[in-house]
Amino acid sequence: MTLRLTVRRLEWTAHVRATAAAYGSALLPVVKGNGYGFGRTVLHEVAAGLATQVCVGTVHEVHDVPAGLQPVVLTPTLHPPAAGGARQGPAAVLTVGHAAHVAALRGRPGPVVLKLGSSMRRYGVEPNDLPALQTAATDAGLEVVAYALHLPLAGTDAHRRAEIESWLARLPADGVPLWVSHLSPESFHALAAAHPHRPLRIRVGTALWHGAPRGDFLHLSADVQALRPVRGGEAAGYRLTPIPHDGTLVMVGCGSSHGVAPLAHDDPARRSPFHFRRHRLHLLEPPHMHTSMCIVPEGGPVPDLGDIVDVQQPLINVRTDDTVWLP
Image (cartoon, rainbow, N blue to C red; front, side, top):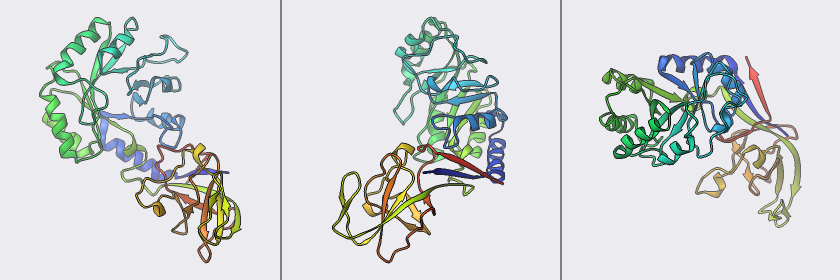
């Protein structure tokens, strides 16, 4: 049973360095969740060579940030951890986007980012409410170190720049940096050049660690654990799913416990994330815990026991058993 991420180290390292260099000193690396498939510890070590701050997902991801990095928590919280925890190093920068987020931090002074509302309509204050939020943060003893605008992936850089420009026109002339996201290096630097009196920084996660689109220096795979010939009309699996035709059941050694799930596709025949020799292995039923059951029709390419199949999943979703670093 193995869900395996294979990394061609030299190519991956070259990609990370080139991406970081393209953004320059404005880069804020993001290391959150499952560490983009690598694990947060691995990426923290790399991030420490790129910047002095690292963005994490929630307050529950602060504890494993190395002492040499200042964590920036991207998601607001109503239940902050107790001050003065075991972690050494600079105090975490927390995010507030609503009066309730500020109230939760009252009596716990420290640096905060003010979250600005975007077209994503998730977190963030609206322009007319920003002055009141700033006042509330100051009255609570919080130090506002930046504004943050989290932009949607949909659309183009031109759309995202227009949204940023709209906010820039409404921010007070206080010199507080604005942190943005999801812009190419070229678009980001053009934006920064157009606003020399407003320091700009950019959070980068997927494009930094994976490439956009994902580079072929990363490969996700799993082992074939068992094979079983079956006849159409029989049943198998947790749900005793009827077998549609004669063929071979292929048990792949990963499942829902690894974060592996069917692909979101309108055509059920294209929902399986498993491929062998460029042929999709159709799912008999959704992946369950540590095993996924696939079926190959009679005459189709059947992997052998121990063969490796390709796994098509976003790396931000999966929990791998092993990471293999190739030269």
